[in-house]
Length: 130
Image (cartoon, rainbow, N blue to C red; front, side, top):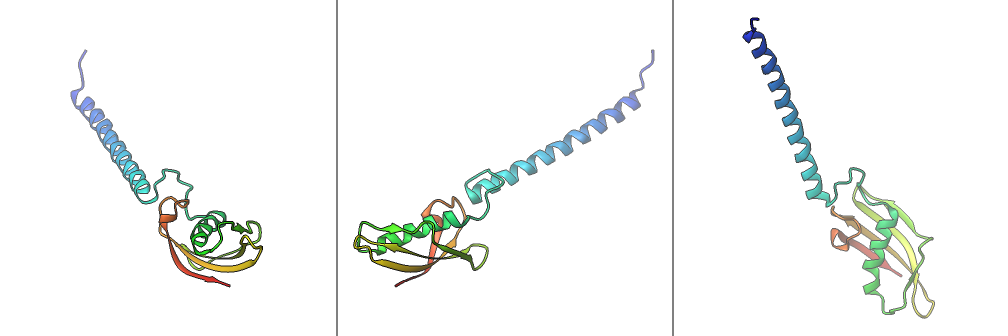
């Protein structure tokens, strides 16, 4: 039985080219995942910009140190939320201190990327308190 070396060579070349393309695709996917992790701190493909609840919790962290009372209660259900741009958030709400005095505030925060629940990934742009 004769072997067709030329035909075998063509088949091997096709499978080698296919394997090379699969390796290129694998390397690209790996590089994209690595870049996503480096910029956001998460591999979850559905994590994007923070929602209103996350921005409001960060706003409370920025406001607490500015109050004179240690017994501050925020209105978690009555806040207003708006986005100035993709990463700039404006929140209006109020808090009460130990003397039950209502204090209104308006805070503008910029999300810098990374873990949204981490205060260090945010920048305080403006804070107005009444």
